[in-house]
Each structure stands twice: as structure tokens, then as C-alpha cells.
Image (cartoon, rainbow, N blue to C red; front, side, top):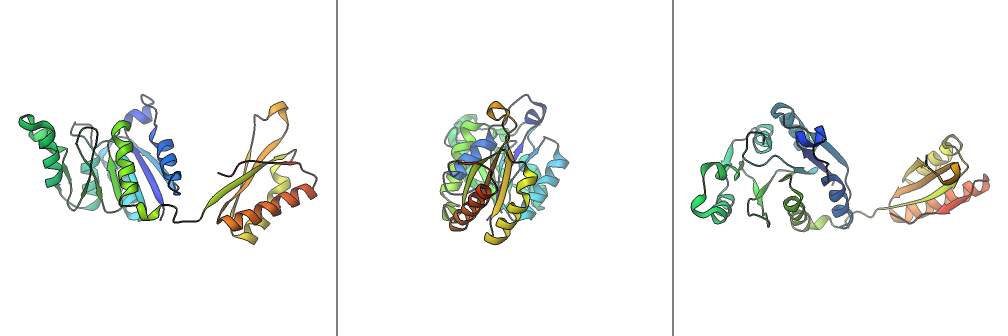
Length: 250
């Protein structure tokens, strides 16, 4: 199952805030033997957000959306998710209970708005302030504040998505190749990729010590196939006269 993230907010696109969700999502997935397939950013423009969410839902991929689920005029995520699915918003009874427990006599219609989600949604508990996020179809929606969003992301990963932990045998392995240009190794990369059914990648290092030409060359995919691919790459490169140096597997 492919997993993506959607990060929402004008403050990210304008540079007023630096996005921290993408690296955190990658780390939390990696710790569970999972990996990110895609990431998208979108501002607080209702029609564009509706179109973006429509694409995310239609992809069939599991995705996490960060930001815009509050009840201020610049929050459009709940409404856009409902519009993208062609469903009305409705006050979720569990969300209402959480909000009333949080605010008591100070519960207002505006605060209850934060518990309105597309019909059929499931709540994501918020351990920080009890204002839930929600899941609907293949999307999981959490606030933009890391202190809330990241525990909520983990709750979904360790609950609804727990069966996906380490479900896909997958490794990445790489090595340094010295004094080669990518054009010298392209044919070898293609041969190894075709033979072992892995993805072979190269990442030139423009800041190598002493200005020496240096490429990170590696393979990713099923562990046994990656091991065989790396051995063939190493042997072939040494035969061609290029020095190599191992890097830790990712």
C-alpha cells in the first residue's frame, strides 16, 4: 500500500513557517518498516484544496493531511474534504463529546464546528487538547501543530495501519564510487536493475572532499535481490578500475 502526505497552509508556502511534518513522517514510517511514496503541499485556497484532496482520495493511497482542520476563517480542510467526496459535513458524536469534555460550560457552536467532518468519518484522538482529528476513506486528517499532529499520526500508524508494519521486505544499500562519471556507469546500472528487479540509483556528491569526483551508487528493493545487485555493481566497478567504499544500508 502506497502512503503519501499532504501538508496544508499558506504559511508554509510563504516561508513564514518551516515544514517539519515531512521529515517526521518519513522517520515515523521508517521506524515501522514503512515508507513514503509521495508528498504534496497546498495553500489555504478552497477550490485548489478541493481539487488536491479529490486527487488524493482518488489515488486509493493511504494519506495523511496536516493542517487546516480548525474553525477559523482560514481553515478549509474539513470543508474541502467533504466537497472532494461529495458528502455533507456533520457533527461527529464522539468529537462532540470530546469537545464538550474539554470546554464544559464554555462549549460554543464555533468550538463544536471543529467536530464536524464528512459523513462516515472516524475520529483520531488528540492527546494534547482533546480536539480530535478524523479519518475518512483513505485519508487521515490531523492539525498542523506538531505537538498534536505527531502523536495522532502515530496513533493511526499503530492502530488502523499496524498490519502494514514491516509488511514489505525492503532495504536500501549504497556505496561510494570514486573518479567515475555517471555516463561511465549508466549501462551497468541498467543491466543490474533489469537482472535483479531492483531500483538502482546514483547521487553525485558535488561537495566531495578535495574535489574528487564521487557518486553514491546503490540499490533498493527486496533484500536478497539488493544484496546480489550490490555485489554485481561492486565487482563490475572494480573490474572497470573504479574504487568503491561501503556505506551503511538505509
